[in-house]
Image 1: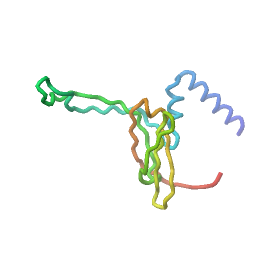
Image 2 (image 1 turned 120 degrees about the vertical axis):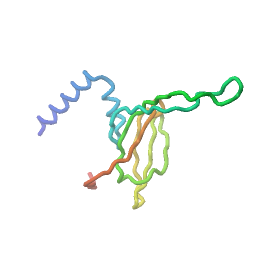
Image 3 (image 1 turned 135 degrees about the vertical axis):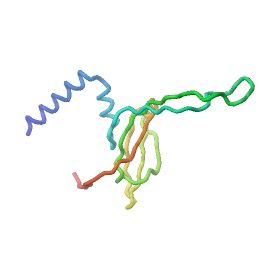
Image 4 (image 1 turned 60 degrees about the vertical axis):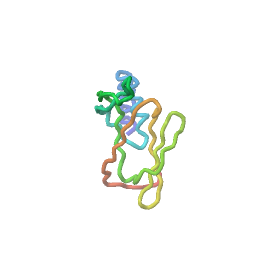
Length: 126
């Protein structure tokens, strides 16, 4: 078992060396959620006002968001708080239990949190 852990740890270091900060950052951002990737959202809306004060013609915009899956057993979103550059999303389940997920550097990126079904939930004390 110790050899397996050592091999996995060594492989992780190699992956981080070759793939750089992107994977390390993704690992940091997955506190309580699962990083899926980047999602581009394209839409049209007025880009401003004309000289005459009318709303201008629609322009195309594109937002790139860090996409995360949130397990649905967390319940309903209750509140969002800030901890330094991180956003902490607080959820309350049907039994009144509070759980949080952390998105690191939320002040520097757009984020998309998408609830996904969670199955075979098991709880234990470590």
